[in-house]
Image (tube, rainbow, N blue to C red):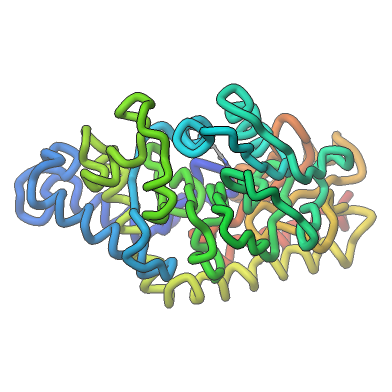
Length: 361
Ligand SMILES: *Cc1c(COP(=O)(O)O)cnc(C)c1O
């Protein structure tokens, strides 16, 4: 498509072109219903079919069995920061959190307002430039759950593996790297992700949680905030974000067509290797901001020799058809977000541009 840019936005982010085209194709008449699915009742058989199929696709792609509930909720990942402790932090228990940057810090802040929280590891003292080593982490039996943020969208760090927590539920915010590479997802009691980075548009948050965890939830909180309410009704207790769920369905089909999570992982690996290799060859010019062993596959962060060059880089990249490269306002620099749907050719284009830019400046 002639006038589409390479969109490095951190979220909402680029979607597969084929998904956008399908949305366009089905916009006015969804499969013979004479209306858009956006205009359809969430109780209509057409929507029910989408809902059921999307649940099945999530289970299939993440390798989760029937012990997991799959929910599609509103309110973004940030609402989960509050509803997790509301549901699961009770009695005299303590919730354990690892602080790896802005999003985990926000999750911690919410939980602190609702119960006892212990930050069991943190990389705050080194400006969140790495993932703390959790191999010797000892959790008290009294721990309600351990909460992690798998990929730190703003700082550009990512867990390369996850700890075994035994009987203690492991809960993970996977908003910015869900379904980007293969993991044993069954070691998590709960995973959640705002869809707008790796899975679709904003407006829907994917929540998967194990039945055992669900059963342990507090039941004297408002009905709308109980996970059980939404699990019992397959996310149809009230009107769900129906159009975003439809787009999520299309994106999951797209992932399946790429060869599933293993298929997108292969492309994601090639993308990030190409970009980090470029930086490693020019470490004084394109300086990575995080420790090598904590590098994110999804958000590649770097600094140039000075801020004027960074501004020039962003402006000239835009002229060359690449947008969204400005680092988060809290950290500055350059950030290339290369989620599942970001094409390999876009990374090649960026690397070529970086070579030229360095030679000219
Ligand atoms: C973007 C992001 C969030 C916030 O998601 P909202 O849907 O805006 O609430 C939370 N966690 C991580 C890791 C993110 O990248």
